[in-house]
Length: 150
Image 1 (spheres, one colour):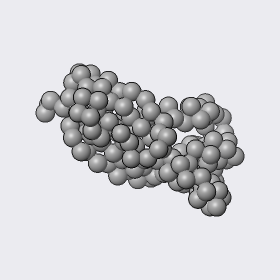
Image 2: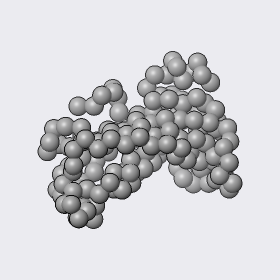
Image 3: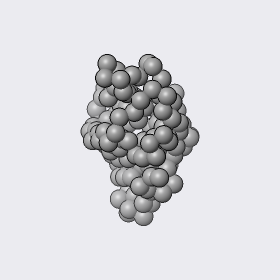
Image 4: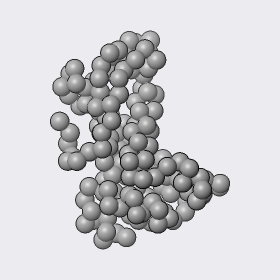
């Protein structure tokens, strides 16, 4: 179903609140869902927003590449997947996302997002703390490349 092995997955039920005037899911809702999926994955890796705040570090979006393959409609059930595909162990991390509609039996959305580590207090780029590298590096789907880069 997904293009890469061993995704972190969560479910998304399409409700009225995300339907736009065209009768399908609004583009902004997809971005919100990839944010939700990324946070759920980070939480599953043992990281929380409280930890980010305590150490004054966070992962901020630098770029998004979004691909809308097919529209989603009210009542659809979606499986959202994410992978960490790159982490340099210094300041950047890349995630890939895919959304699979159970009704359509197809990938309806995909995205790649590049994150950069910042100080929450200033927004300035900072080196990833050990807390981040200890959680994110082992989750990179190609661990050999991640370890070579760190």
